[in-house]
Image (cartoon, rainbow, N blue to C red; front, side):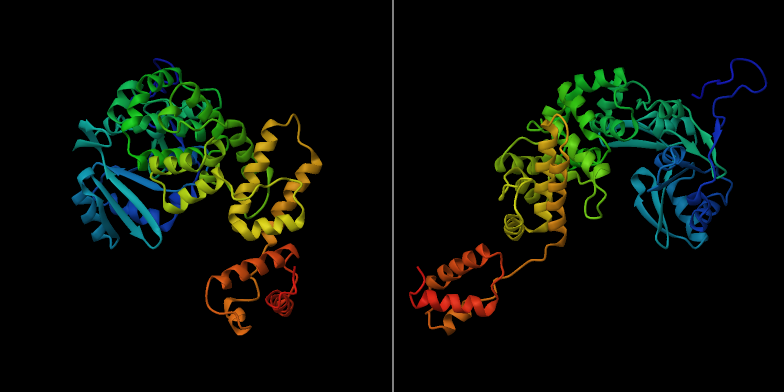
Length: 442
C-alpha cells in the first residue's frame, strides 16, 4: 500500500490509494487517438488508468513503446464501449480480460482489473475485480505497478518511484513466491536490472531467490528464454548483469558456453557509444556471439536451445566459426577478398568481434589500430559485390565440352582474377581462358 510520505498525522498525510505525484504533460497522453479511447472507456463513468511501462518510462523520460490501459469494466463491456464510439476493437485475449483498440496506426491494450485465483506459470485462473490495489499486486516489480489517470496523477502502491530513483528492481511481494508462480520472472528480474537498475544495486532478497530457484530455468521453453535474453543483451551494458548471472550459477542453466564477458562489454560499447555509424547499432545476436566461447556445434546447440530462427542461428554459427580471419593489419586486397567471400554484413560482424576481442585484452587502446579497424569498416560500407565477368557458356563457346572441366577452369580463372584484385575485365579474362585452353599458361 502507498506509504504516508509526509509522516503520521496532519491533513496532508496520504491515504492508501491516493495519487502521490503528477506526470509532466505527455505527448502520447494528449494525442487525439489516446483521448478518443479514454473518452470511450469513461463513457459510463468508470475509472480508467494507464498502467505499467508507459507510466514507468514517462517518469524516466524514455520513449514510450506501448500504451496499456486498465479498467474495472469487463471485456465485453469494453468491446461495447469502443464499438459505440466507432473505435475498432480486437478481442485479443478475452480469456484474460484483454481487448486491443486500434485507431489508425495506434494500438491500445486494454485489460480488465483482475486477481489470480490460481497460478499455472505463464497462465493463471483469474477473476475480475474493481480493486486497483489487488490488480497492482499481480505485477512482477514495483516499478511496473505504477499507474496514472488520464490527468497524469501517479499512483504508486509499492514505492516503485523510490525504486526507480534508486535504480533498484524489486519484486512486489516475496521474490521466491513470485518466481515460483512463473519461473520466467527470474530472467525478467535480470533483464529489468540491465535496463533500469544501477550496476551493482541488485536487490539482495531477489538475488538469493534467483540463486535458489535457478533450476526452474531448465524447464522454460526456448522461445520464452530467448525473448528475455535477447532483450537483456540490448541494454547499454549487458555484460555486468550477465556476469552477475554467471557468478550466481544462473547463466549455466541457459548458456553454458557464455564466458567471454570482456569481449561482450567492449562490443556493446562499440555498438552503443564508441562508433557513430549508421550501419552499426546494438545487435542482440552479435552480442550473444561475443560472449560465447564455442564452435559451430556449440553455436547450433545454442540456436536450438533458444529456438532462434534459421537466419539467427546461421549468423551465430558464422561468428562462432569464421570463414575468414580478420586482423586490423589486413591489407586492402585481402579485405576485398574477405568481403567477396562472406559479404558485407558477415564481414562487419566478424570485424567488430575481432576488434572487441583485441580491445578486451589490451591494457590501453592503440590509436593506429583503432584507425585500422575503422578503415576495415569503411571498406565494408563501400563494398559492392563483384562477379567474375565470364561464365560457363563462354568456355563452351571456346570449344570446351560439357562436363566437370567447365567448373575446374572457372575456379582457376576466378582465382587468377581475384589475385589481380578483380581488375581484369571480361576481354582480359577471355584472353586468359584462351591461353589456358591452348596450353600456353603454366
